[in-house]
Amino acid sequence: MKISVLGCGRWGSFIAWYLANKGYDVYSWGPEEDYSYKVLKETGKNEYVSLDPRITLTCNLQEAVEHAEIIIISISSQGLDGFIKRIRAFDVSDKNFVLCMKGIEVSTGRRLSEVLTDNGISPERIAVWVGPGHIQAFVQGIPNCMVIDSQNEELKRYLADNFKSELIRFYYGDDLIGTEIGAAAKNVMGILAGMLDGCGLVSLKGPLMSRGAREVARLIRAMGGNELSAYGLAHLGDYETTLFSPYSHNRAYGELLVQGKKFEKLAEGVTTAAAMKKLGEKYGVDLPLTNTVYEVCYTQKDVEDYKSLASEVLSKLFSRDTKTEFYQ
View 1 (cartoon, rainbow, N blue to C red):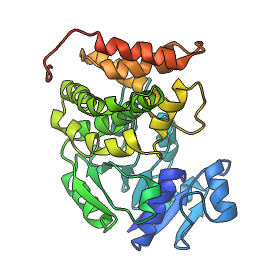
View 2 (cartoon, one colour):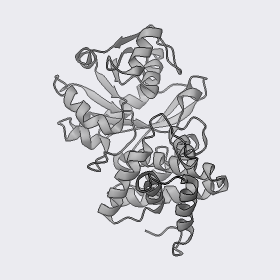
View 3 (cartoon, rainbow, N blue to C red):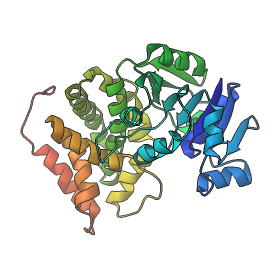
């Protein structure tokens, strides 16, 4: 199997390393001017993995695309539309695409697989690979479970069966809407978890896990998916690595935000909160936790005391009308 991993940042570099160690012919692509690519090119490693000698590192996008039977994309979710347009300049009619990224396009509310289909990629050639697991743990040999989902039953089974190992146990997903929305939404809950850490309200992470999954379940159902997906690996199953882990970018972003400090790395949950807010309004779904994250991240950027702001916004959640636990 010939594989190209497009994007050589934190997750992309790990995927290339993981699949090369399984014996596959792997190309790892990054733009020549990109910091992550330069580090791998100049040093042969980054802070997570060493560049396996079986991996071909390239900044030539055409070379990477034409090499592959399976194209794995791992970039910032908001750049996917423009990136797939670049890829479509080449013949990809016989390529299968795997999205190893989590997010919702903020300008349109599109799921990432929809971004591909709207750019002419057949749904039968698209899969997503999501779920819990931090690279820092994986490279220490600590295993985890993940999920591969697709409208194409044969494709998702082929990928899961061939990508599995003692390090990653894969499950077959059966709800692409729920898998994608759940995977993206867990980053929003991660930011809120960090806010709780920063405000000294760690004991509220238990209720956050419960209410967060329920909130996402309502949205998944309204969008036509299976609400039980919110309780699967893509969302609730990923909470430990998002709500509690010191490695979580989104949790760290939330914690530093309420401390008035800047987080220097990518936190996809920020744009996802804006996208989910739009989806909630579109589908008439109550998303109080998502709206809390949105309010702190977007509407009060000129305040000096983010901790007081976060405490004030969080207190609003407790003053809401009493509801049954599983209201729709």
